[in-house]
Length: 316
Image 1: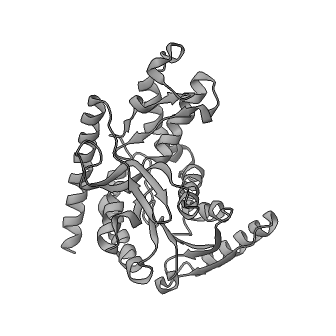
Image 2: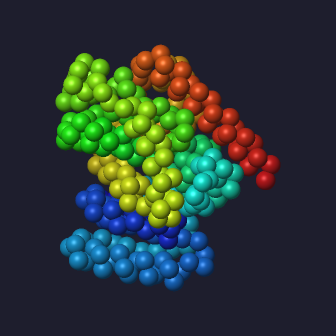
């Protein structure tokens, strides 16, 4: 059984993912961490969640804290702390402001729970994953971000809906930035186990229209209801369950790559990774030339922003 800590638990995503993580059979303890001044909210959230688990018949030890020393013995630390993206705001505009928060948080995690895995959710998630890796001083496989996992699931769902097939029949993924430069791997997209280009009946897929919907999905949700909550919350629980269950599934997360994708690397970005109790391990892949070119552009974009953010942090 395992202990999961949620940093930033009083936020929309943090509070909902506490509920979804509470239903993972490998988890028997959840610690809700919030900043000082949020004690009443943390207490109320804990009691509300305890009622939820009681109603569901779930045995769960649930507690809250504002002290990072309490996160010791955590198996996974989910980091949702940061400033939320506003309507019309690019994820990358958030970079430096959230990097200050993440750097401090990651340093505390590395100090008090050096054996844990860090699951970074704070946006821009690729840049924040690099910041967390640097300031926690943990091993690359221990630090990974939500990345393009949810984007990949959105694409999978839209393809299934378009062709009226069960979502389980569709396998696809998106790599690169969790943002505008994301790269759909059409070369790796299958329906019923058959490559999509070999299925004449499925040749009419409006790829650009569908990818436009994937790219704008988060922005549309934020514009209409103020925050994305349920999608990220369920996606976080999937990653936590995969790690703690030692499932060895290949999911697309933000992870540090050296040269796994056509020799491109030295950055944290969305790539397929094997997930288990030891963490996230990028899987070497071969993709089409146009996908390589677009992925390289995405990597260069994230690497440049990451470098600028870390340079500025170093001067503070």
